[in-house]
Image (cartoon, rainbow, N blue to C red; front, side, top):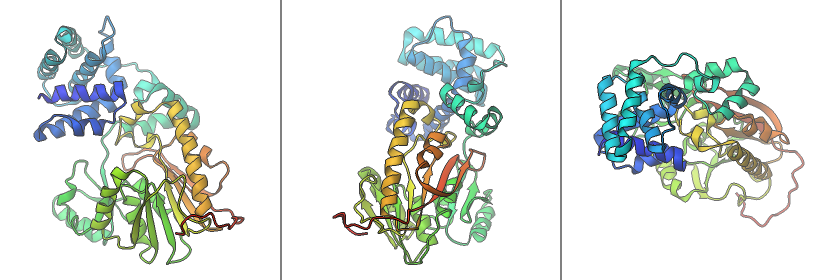
Length: 412
């Protein structure tokens, strides 16, 4: 099947059915040799959606239906952003429409030919220039200022570098990789972080099978580094732990601690266990449990990380489909869930101990506004950049007045 047919169908699933792009691509009928191109086409369109739409819509006398709309996005992306001959970008997209929706192929052909004959539009609305939905742009503009949003939104349009958490001697590992002809540099946000080119083959890197590293953005690593533990043999809990990067970092940072990785989603647990085994995290136990109803006594945990479910607004460069999967109502629901999880996390943490609240979102509603009733020691919001994702994390001190009553739940 033509990779462009598959790409159009995947995009339609994202826009019409709110299916994650990665999920739709994984299930798509596509030959392995075309997977890389499929990924580039789909994620390229999602990253540049608003400018692409502004480009071709100038030449549409009528509003295209869902499939034609996806085809026009795909064709315009190839014309503007890919090293594909213009005639091939048009003809291949029209050929895909001939299979998907023959009656609309003439319309798609005519519009794309007009795109090839004209320069991209010079005037774009602010949300189009920043490649953000109107509601996200307005929220971020009001919170951070238009200039800041314009600046960090540039990072959201680019494929991210590969970032690893390297658990052996970082400098020596970087030298080994550079000797292989691969560009590598130390990240600034974590003593474990190493940045590599996008698309680097992880499995072929030195030490993969031996557990020398795991894939993990350095902004997420910074959140783990923010956790303070007051005793070497502490009981540390990682909530919403899959796929296990934060758990692994905790294991390496605190080798004498007892670490409990809590995950509710049963389908994600096998990968979590597999990753922890490869990384040789022998001081970790995996527990399937609901983070809103933890099976621990009050004040029974020495330290905790809550990596809460969120809208993923900080990782749009990595998952550009996220801006089409969530709206304002969904963010409000997520904020309520985050507050519930934080309240439960505070219940189980020892008096005076610290926990870290973290989300890969920069929406204030999922950041400071979740923490209004917490004793925040410090917090940091990292805007997206060329070297890291957008992220928010805060260190929070548990109240000194925990009521120590037996709740009838299992002790950690």
